[in-house]
Structures are given as structure tokens and as C-alpha cells.
Length: 437
Length: 107
Image 1 (cartoon, each protein chain N blue to C red):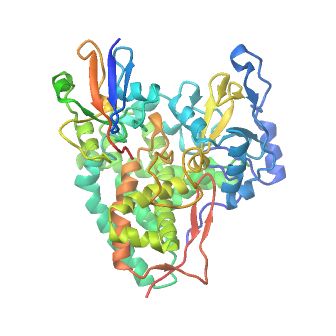
Image 2 (image 1 turned 180 degrees about the vertical axis):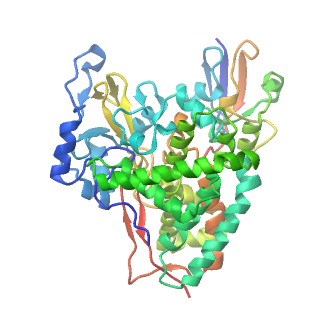
Image 3 (image 1 turned 60 degrees about the vertical axis):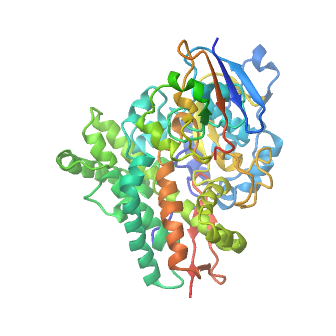
């Protein structure tokens, strides 16, 4: 079994949570300038308030179940300074939405980003126009037309393979590690165009580079693993490019191989995609199935009306956003929903909290496929709107879920071996034993 | 300034005046027009700025690109021959007033 990350440890791959260990934390804090400085008064900011300090938020609590803390923060103010994660956490829907719509004030190009060290400077940490060049280099690979004409049949083939492996494993198998993870990893491997690698390579590379991205404790063994994976990805790319130039296919690397894009960008963007394109479909598949199995009335509605598979998928992304938080940094002093922020402030945009804001969603803590439809923020918004959105929808809602309930109609959670959901930057099931007849 | 009229399914309408070269999506989002989301910020990637352009304005519209065409197949409300993505249609000298119907659903 592949273990998801290091529970409760440094935690914050794509954002910057502080390590839990006091010595590691002090070492880090002495190396990083604090952003939470005093802001000079200006007329525009005069009416605004300082961000309240949420010193009661801890990383272990966030890891176990962040939602009660998100609720408490959201009820108090849309933005808090959170010492435990060394950044402001933005928890209201309106404030998160404002950030998504204003890339000039809220930059993705965060200073001191460990993601840049672990994976190189990918499009995820660039602003337009630099971001757009990289984003455009992904061409039509992830767009609905290519999914329909090319990837859908491949996803179906992969789904059959891994679903049969799950069935062969027998009742008591783990839904995440015996099915969702290898299925998502194999799909991603082919989308990336790594014909010289395995889905196991992808799971290993993804997790070790994510761990590097969150290595605020500067643990040499974490860097060693992350750097080894990074080099293996570089070698796989170098190996594949000549082949794909001669034998082009609809994969990302094939498209990139034919473009005047610097190798450095190709490497960084593919590493970001390997790190950021595997957990999400894996976790949304498991979370959606977990929620439906826990709500048999809603599962019955979905099975009676297959159009509801995609509704269940979206409700799941709202309810437990697989990426719960991502970073931004202010380029200037600003006021966000009445809260004053200094220039250079490091922010965590907490989609996991925004998606449960009662100002937008009624009874937000409940999984309910019949709720009035409102746009959630689970895929992000603006220029950084998730490039893999349609791939995720296709592989999970169109291909995997209908086939799964068709193949294993008596699928159920194991009452004697409970599932475990965990995480906050990435949240999903870390254990999900299932039974069937 | 060019004007855009968004007609809601309820019959209620909003007319907004915007700078030339502003897209229908941007105009709607900036003015808080209901029913236009524009999640992806105008990349023809999310299909949440779907509008039905009234037939009398058809000739002034830009051609449908492949990206817009495939994305229109992904709209939540039914695609019709009047369907366009609001992010791909801009107002300007060639189109100084336009009326569009907002669909019942974007998500």
C-alpha cells in the first residue's frame, strides 16, 4: 500500500504550513521574514480592520477535520492571521472569489515557494502573461474534444482493468489504494505521454515531489527523495521526447515536444501536473463514492437517473474540495472584504471553507445532491481555473462511477473497519475498506 | 459606450454600458448580472458564461472557434443555434448594442 504523505507533518505542499515540531518550526521561522507587519494608514484602508489572529488553529486539528475551524473563522471574519500556518487564511466565499478575479493584487508568483525548488517554476506559480504561454503550451490535450475523441476510451479500458483488480482482491479491499489510486495514476501517465514509465512510478513521483514542496523543515531525506524523483522525471522526459517527435500522440509531452518551449518549463509543468493531477481525481472518486454509500437514498436517486452522477461529482467537489487551499501573495497593500492586508502578505485561499459558506450554500456541511445548484470554487477560478477539470469529470463521473456500481451493485462501506478521511491542503480518504456480496 | 442587455429567464433585464472590446462575460461579472459565472476568466474552458444571442445580432458575431464549439457541447442548459460563450463575444464599433438571453443554469 502506498501511504498518502506524512500525516500531520510539515503538511503544506502547495502552500506553506509550518512544521508541527517546535525545533523545525523555529528553524524555519528564523529563516523566513514575517509578513504580518504593521500597515501604514491610508485613507482607503482607514475604515478597514486588522485581521483577527486565529492562534487556536493547529495543524493536527486541521489535518483531522478542518471544517469546524473553518466555520468558526468564517463566522468571525473573512480573513485571519493564522500563526500555525504562517499565513493569512481566507475563508469566506466572497473573499476567495475576489482573489480569483484580481490577479494583479493577488499574485500566484509567491516568493520563497518551495514548490519552485521541488518541481521548478511551473505555470501554477506564474502570473499572466508568463502563465498564459505555459498554459497555452498544453494545447487541446485536456479539452473536452480530445477527451471525447481520444481519452474516454482509454479511461474506459483502464477502468475495466483496475475495477477487475479490485474485484479480484475481494471484499475487504481498499477502495482508494486498490482501485482509485492506480486508476487515476494510469490515466495521468498516458495523458502526460510517459510510455516508458508505470503508474506505480507516477504514484511514487507524485507523493515524493509533493512532500518536497511541503518540506519546510528542510529535512534532507525528504529533499533527497524529491530530488531523486525530479531527476527520474527529467530522464523519462529526455527519453520520451525523441520518440514522441517521431510518433506524435495527443499527450501533453507529445504536444510540448513540437513547440518552442524551454525544456526547463516543460519539466516544471509536467512535474506540477504529476504532483497536482493524481490526488485530485483519486480523492474525488473515493469521496463521492464514500458519500453516496453513506447516503443510500441519494445513491438510489443517482442509480435511477444516471445524469445525477455528474451532479454527485460536483457536490462532492464542493463538500470536500480535493485541493482545500492554495497560496497567493499580495502585490500591494489592500483591503479584502474589510480586512487590511499589507503588501507581500502570504495568503491561503481556503476553497474548502468557501465551499461551505452559508452565505452561498444552505445547510453547507451536508452532502446533498439535490441542493440548489450554485457555482462552487473547487476548481479555482480565473486564469488558474483547473486545467484538468474536464479530464477529472470524464474519468470519475462519466467512466468510473457508473461502471463501478454496475460491476459491484452491492458495494458498501465496511461497518467493522471504518474509513478515514484526512487532510486540509489535500483532503481525501486515506483508508476506505469496502465490502460486496 | 456600447450597451449589452441581459434578459433573465424571468423576463427581467439588465442593460449595462461598457468600454469597447469588453466581452459579454466580463461585462456581466463586473456589473453583477445574475446567471453569468465566468469561472475560467475567459479562456473558453468552463462553459459557465453561456448566453443565447438574439438572432438579429447573428451577423455581427465572430466565427465560432473549435474551442468554443466543443465547450458549448458542455453547457448545463441546452445548446441551441443561438448559443455562444459570453467570453468569446465582445462589443465594439461592429456591435454597439446587443441583446442576449441568460440560460436557466450555468452549473
